[in-house]
Image (cartoon, rainbow, N blue to C red):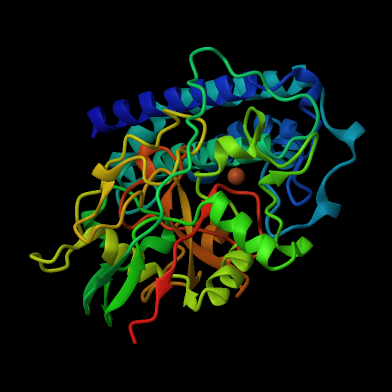
Length: 422
Ligand SMILES: [Fe+2]
């Protein structure tokens, strides 16, 4: 366990370095920008990540006193479900220096508590947050998930674009490939994880259960920007179908990226980034529907000659911030699953028709974060499956679940269609 703790600590430090690199992309003057109304300004997240780490490990699990009572509380939690009234006025935020000092103090305090966590592993072995150092996993994965959140917030900025550092490759353009339809026969898929077999899982990942699916016909690839543009024009360009990932400014149609607007022609072959509600309209208009969570997992993780069983996490070189843009659909035929479904990881999360709801046996096991999932079992959130280029590889285990509000258009989310079998 000492070795595991060491590896986890190193992974956490690497995540902190990446947090710092991402914030460095942002000019200081932009820290008070709030490009998504339902979320706080960027400055909040600079304080939120260390506050969360300290509040979970130091205060929540090890019972330490507050580091800074005001800042521990101010930076405790982001906003979703939306509550714009909860955001302090711009003048109420601490100075950048104060936030950076707090960040450094919190990180140092977290590291300073690791010997205590090691002792607790022996003294409190029945505490699920201490067993397997789960609290450290929780803090680490929270930080990694916020990297993706920050990046999709960057993409929604207006005004002066962020400069792309030379080490980040330029985007790949192209028309992409059109999807084919492949039939996946009736069969089972196991969703979720078993508590004792898993090093770490969020509360929503438990427990493992079998779902028997009828046959379904799935597109091999997601819908592209150019496909959406055809659809949008055929429907006479209604405002509700204009993706939030597009922009009409300054001259003609553009697509938003972390590093500013790019001409539509460059991004025509990328998966279209839309909300779940928009994706449903597109599917219905094509006589199709969105896949379920179980169907996408069956497409990704089973094979014609295998019994369905939880598989090793599929790996994708497309994830993990190795690039900062989507790629043209069909760019990676080697990513095809045994059923021929390509790019199930790395070119965008994919909307499903599955309401985010607890698996059988759900328990909010993390007493320091009981609302992680339960706050979102509200009928407004749908499961998304897969990963985007901004998703850390650590989150690619098959049981990991992600979800967004159905009408939330900002994250790196696309979709593919399921067609009628009749
Ligand atoms: Fe958070």
